[in-house]
Length: 284
Length: 289
Image (cartoon, rainbow over all chains, first blue to last red; front, side, top):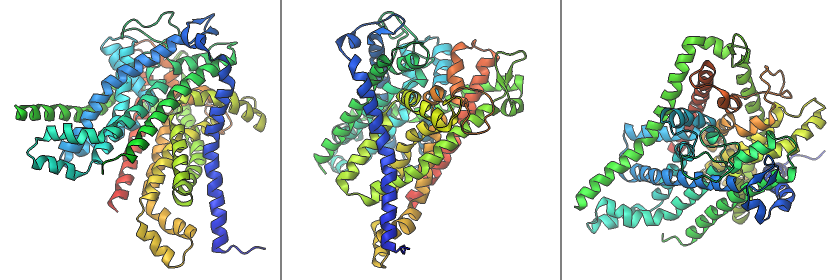
């Protein structure tokens, strides 16, 4: 019988921790590997640039790609300025009072609302009440409320990491509050804000539940003409072809999943590299 | 001139700042108004404890007990997997490995958080569901268990990232004190570090749970969508989120069914609101130390 000395128990515990980590990391790698292996065969220019044919079993996924881009662009244009302004207010102007605490509570809870509840809300408010119909703009408005807390939190962290002495130096020179923010604080916080923005763009492009009844269409035979059109999107298209259409060739499903995964992961890579790059070149 | 610009800017950023509060109130108000009309018509107790969800039968039945149980089973299963594994991974990343390995592991965890839920659902359908069916020899692999496994992966990034932050923010003096007394590294981690970081780890777990309860696409694709009350984790279930996503498209605006779905939305909102509120209290507790 081996005696369980502290040294041995440390080794054993570390082994268990290591196995747990493998259990977390391995599935991601396996998942990505399976999708790439099965999907790569259908990826070619035609798949990316033509309309679906024969009940979506053949042809390409162009409308879904365009639709995803349209929604992501609109959402970012709505949510990024608003979120950054809110972060500026919270970090640069707000005093520590009840209202500020209420805002922080609001952000925390907005971040926790399930995506499908955003879908319900967006359907009720934008599609029905404001009569925007099922459209790009209704979906983008819904998604932008959902992404707002994420943008605020990451931007606020970025602003907060700019040393206070930078601001004091600027104020000492007689520069006004807003000029200090615009010329000193924002440029120094830019990398953090960008990282958050790109990560949230990645998240938006993969979301399905909020656009399920606000923007997504089963099948549209043409590309969107305006922001009041319904669109096909990649994640919704993937959901449709993997669950609703019988005799769907599996390599097309894998191919669609691969395109979506590629988009999302590339953006995450970009975001993470921005962060690493700017951390190395930071001025403080 | 500069002064005017300053005042205007301050007003604008203030408006953006209070937007999030306005949205929370709007969402709650909207869900509440629709639900209130429904509760007045159908009865809140019949809604929560009713055993059957049959929106198309005569008379219509909108009991969400089976859906509550469905969400509960899936969430419980996901927690049993994700909590121990997630916390252990956070410990491994923060306490065992050196900086470069840590960066790579954190990077991979971050990638995991970015994988869309439909992709996870699809992989679950193709790989996990047939495996579950063969492994446990049951008629269908579309069970609460399959949902739990896939959702565990979605909760993991949240749990790992927040726990890891908490563990690393434990002051160095605490560790040095224990090490100086002759404790091994593992003893220090187990008795000192884990204890100090506990409130934040609890918060991390709760936020993970919040994410699992609200997850929609994955569960819709792999839990079987059967609205019977499940007796074990190896039976098909239907969750609250899946019902909303599956049936919203076919309802008539303003009908009982439409309002019933909003009432489920209200339940979800209240559940996640509570979870996030409490988790935030725990996180605040950690910061004050």
